[in-house]
Length: 161
Image (cartoon, rainbow, N blue to C red; front, side, top):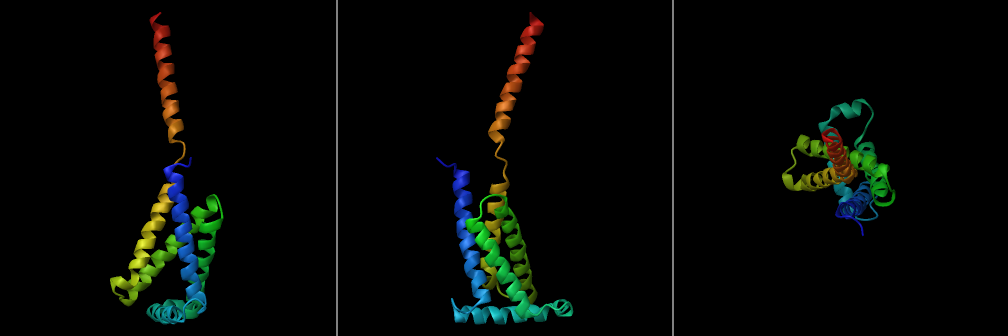
């Protein structure tokens, strides 16, 4: 039977992965929702206006939206389908994206209801990463401590004899 830690990681990976595939797709194409796509276009225009440094380095609002959308889709697919260490890398990249999105929302002065989802999913990504990075060798450490304790007791017995 799978450990609670494993079940938690798998559930978070699937839920977060599917969410980011969905949200990234909305940023890239109007096929899922024309209204949401239009809203994303409008929001990213305001982010690009608030950061004139992006324009200086050649990043337009369209390019910014496509970069973030592509990162979300790619990392979401990795979180959903790819086993092992790449999930942690994807998780970390998505956490950085969420921090950037929070920064953008704060920069343009959006109310909390506009960026609450980024806060929640940032927290979920952080939790998933922390749980995934917990060491699996805790039982081994306890076993090695018990072995060390037994070895110390045997040495004491030898000294006493």
